[in-house]
Length: 210
Image: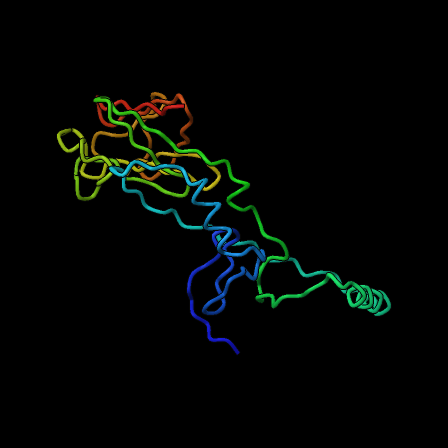
């Protein structure tokens, strides 16, 4: 039995890596080397001045149990599999989905671009979030907001899900976060779309660029 290493998971389908030196994902059967090259070419550029935090990956759905087949049908299926010279069964990890759920190639790749009042543009990639506030240590993506005394140390958070949908949430700020003219309740997410504008406190208006 191979030793479990806990070396991570497949970037395509999320299936855990089973053993050291594994070259092919046991969930989607795609070589890891091909994934790295494809993702490096497709990965959106993120501003080096905008550190981001990875959002939690949703758990893969549990596979449905197939209905019990009649013995005669099972025997026919077994003979058909044996007769195919191109059929090869590779070790399947228990609990892995029967086919990969949506992969990163199926996801629209785009970057949320935030334009701040003094001309700064901060980018947030899908699967990440950033904090907005005046504390440069707690909000390293927006250190230029340190001079905004009317903002809280951690004022709000902006994130982009893996499917490209973006949101903003107030982090219990003193002077509020406003989207489309309404003040957001604390820790409640509101959607963001290209062309939207949100406001931090009284005068920090941020545009969501197309």
